[in-house]
Image (cartoon, rainbow, N blue to C red; front, side, top):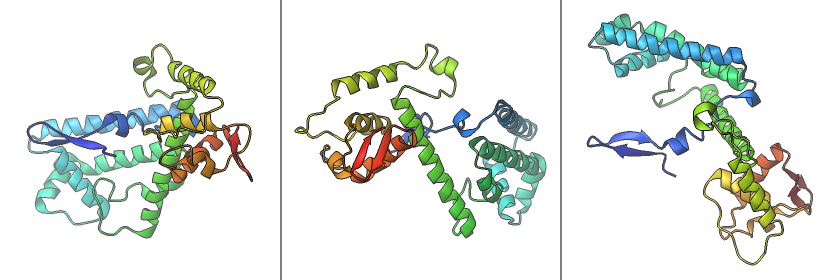
Length: 262
């Protein structure tokens, strides 16, 4: 699916916020996030913002691109050109690097993934691709991606039940998050014993997939193949992933005869 686009006369790249930001699983109580960690992350983010604004205001020739290009070379241990050394000195890029490393460590801790921080924090390649990465770095990045996807699936399953972890509740959900729960309950009541004749379309979003699969589960176990056959596309692989997410939440149980409602 597309996650970016182009905007304006200069065709500036943009991201689709509904897919890249609004669905991103930020750390929360379910990952072990504490108030102290939340405050620490905020302080470090503010320090980075203040540092960048200060050096850019003091040195008109500096740019964010220049600062971060030098930062990547520092992480890679590559020698700096005379121009890059000037940027490093005026922009205090070593200070910027330290702040970013501390922020990365704090975010990893907020997710409960400090084991990955030991491998990934301070490594080059976070903002630019590398031709060859050390095996341990590539493996850790793959594990990080897998954990983020799994957390996203669990959050989507929660939302299908009406539990939404708003990033900024006061702005995003001032009246509370009850609409999703009500919609799911009505759908379950209306389709508690689904017909087996008309094939269904596999939903496009993960939230809709979870809600639909949950409706199809019954107290009697059903094989994955039978559940997949309810859809025109017969999405057995995608269906299995949704069932696994529901199982993590106790909403589905796998038995020798197949899957049943939890």
